[in-house]
Image (cartoon, rainbow, N blue to C red; front, side, top):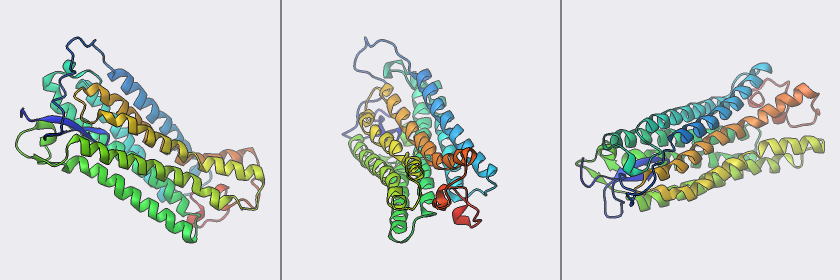
Length: 323
């Protein structure tokens, strides 16, 4: 292996780079007396638990559409794509634990380091896709009942979040060339060190969290002045505001970014868990408004004047059939 082969992180995945501002290879902890630890099993249990809960919410969302005899709309398809990306991310993390992810650097077998880095790249890539697609799904839902300037703002958020987070996902594959240098070392060039990667990921996390919170609060502007019962209004606002928790998950990723460039790969566990939580919570938040409509319909009739986006509608137009 290339003696200049060093590890850093882009997005939610461990990656490699060479340069003056990178840390030594991730097979050292700085202390030979470090007690043996293995967080591989807790990592697997946590990410799959989060994915399982997100799967339950998505299943109920789809069931709500089928029960109401409504066709799936673009926001449903994009959310399903986000869920598939989340499952793939967790699958690659499970593969990574087979190659000693969750252990201190000194405890990782040298033969496992390259495949560990390679598959962690895929895990991080799909984790980012899960987050951006689930956020996009909620934005598409908002497009269905927003108008005028509000609709333009939603379009801006939708496009910009895909550019920012999509660029972050792409960065993982192009920061070193040729790409296999990321996990094999050898000849090539890396144009980003861990310090720059950390800064980029911090900016992305801030923008992602801000977009979540903005999209979660935007329905207040639309619904607050609607002529509906107060209980209906508060229930709809509560359901549509769950994205605030997705924003909190994005911001909580920032402290875990200290794992970028850390020689001890056990520090990556927290980053992977928070990265998975971001996508999972966003899927749940995007599903809750539809589930509220389902349970509300089963418990009693909806107030006639409630906006069609929050009730069981009789209008078969595509825009009103998605929620």
